[in-house]
Image 1 (cartoon, one colour):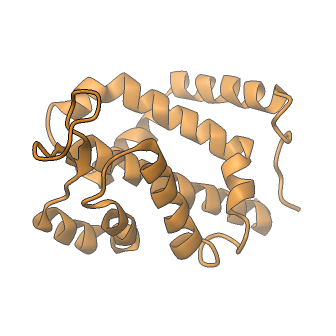
Image 2 (image 1 turned 90 degrees about the horizontal axis):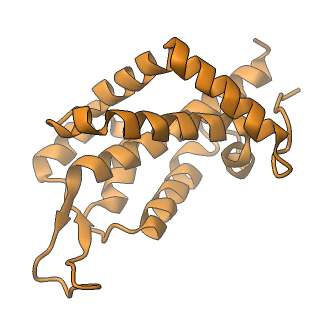
Amino acid sequence: MPEPQSQFQSAVASMIEAVMFENWLRFYFISEKPEAAPVDGEAPLFMAVPVKGMERIAELYPHLLPLADEMNGQEVTFEMSQRAICNFVATHVEGKSVARDSAAMIFNSSTFQVQMQLFNTWVQMHEDQLDRGFVEFGAWRKLFDEWRQTPGARELAEKLTLSIQGSPTAGGKETVQ
């Protein structure tokens, strides 16, 4: 693989990891604050990673700790999640494992979009299994990677790639020269 293409794939992987981690945090660490003012009759949801959890994240995934720090204690909304991921990528990924000012191009790439859709499909398909008990983030990544290698996931990836690359909003196939 040529060096620029390898860098692009690495950048996609770093950004997918951030999205996966944010999703993992929401999956296991959302809590209601009963004292919070109800919205539409329900207490708002907040990110509540306990001290021991933050210590474990710092130990195992220090590069992802800033994302957990930013989200912890915040009300969980789509906007908060999106902002936290974008802030994390801009502050801790761009200029390091991703070229400066390239995040928007990568977020919009068909490669990233296919990986996002595969990840979302995997979470939906395995939600019951993941919900049975706490699954550590490294195990999440391993389970997802193993699933991506299955014939069904590979076929889905091919279909998604063709679909995304064929859509009028897609920029076509990315290759970095």
